[in-house]
Image 1 (cartoon, one colour):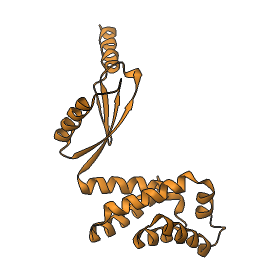
Image 2 (tube, rainbow, N blue to C red):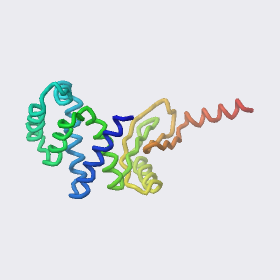
Image 3 (cartoon, rainbow, N blue to C red):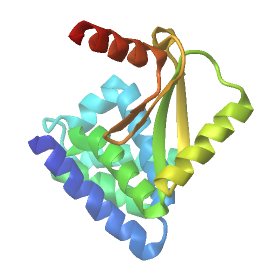
Image 4 (cartoon, rainbow, N blue to C red):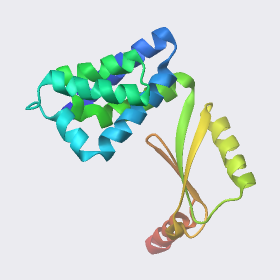
Length: 180
């Protein structure tokens, strides 16, 4: 819980900067690129998160990587701040929360759609359009196949779940029949 509060504070601070200069989407892409590398490379994560390595050494690593990844000065300074405050271990959470803030500001909603089988492009467009009308936001669809659904779809938007799966309908029918 405390980790999430800390991560939220840093994500909001970066978002404030991004909104002021209009580059919040760019900062998201750069932060995501660095965070992906950070999570993928265990040795990098260990060095940057471990306070036994001195701060100038960790900042030099960030500077070197920033040059290779072509990161903006704002993101480089943000990463340096995380090192200075020994908050680098929160980078994955900060990245997730920052993406949520960026999506909110841009009027986007990320939808995780589980389907029983692959959908045609036309059906996927229809679902996307319907969800955009329902949510009043641009929808970014993340589709996965789950054969246990039997048929239908389950859409997750933030904390909301829209379940139109055959599996759930059968479970509800079973409960109704059991009650008599």
